[in-house]
Image (cartoon, rainbow, N blue to C red):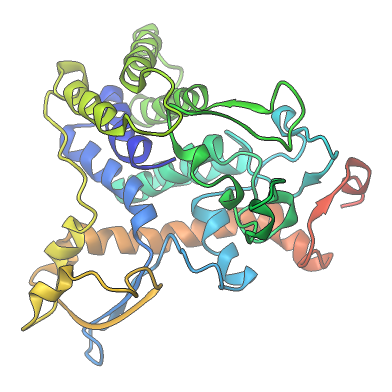
Length: 357
């Protein structure tokens, strides 16, 4: 998923479920910032309050598998159920770490964040939870299991859904996953995104009001899905109507049922710039360069006043807690078996081999 779901739709789901606009903004920004938080910053280097953040995304495909396992499966590709019906492949392969929607691990991870009552953790976990729909049938590191046949795709590193580019992330796209058996090979992203929104709505409502959900809330869920369906609109094979869709999300946010306040256009530098500065050279903060996508950013950065109350600092602290919590859950259910049975190099297997794990 991209900014359309993780920021705009997440905000609409949060306000419709009962969060205030301010709370929904913190949740939605945190959800989207998971994708933008890809650089390691060292702030106040050499001082008592020196600080290093927790990245939640990386575009450095040269990282080792161990490093990737601390980012992709935790924040983007939560391992689920290898025997999930929609995961049936033509080659019969299944994967112990395959991402599947609404899995037990995904539920445990978001439930733990909701229990914390930390809006930043809730936003981060919302990102991971929703991605289990969009990223289903991919594994969060290098693996031939991710490989999709094609003249040019064969040269790609097979990390996550890199072989199919951004196709799983566009809300109005219909595409084909040639690895899967029919009818699961035809992917309608709108169906996936609306299902993710519905389940996220239920999670938020249960957090705010408890279970079981009232009849009124079930009606709210139906109206939410109807509104998002209309906002996403018709199929968009080239993702060219993104700006039109965003305008519809913003218009929806202004309605009473969605908080009645226009959601701000997303600015990925907003929280960082309010918390951190480069003394004597603030303008170069915004300067783009050839190395802007590298994980480590070595320029000198300094805290602004009252930084501990800033959204960026609170997000980073929440990301550290969320990474540890999610890793503990995944280690217990998945990773410890890979260590003890030495599946570090290959975790793809047939159904018969799976029974031996």
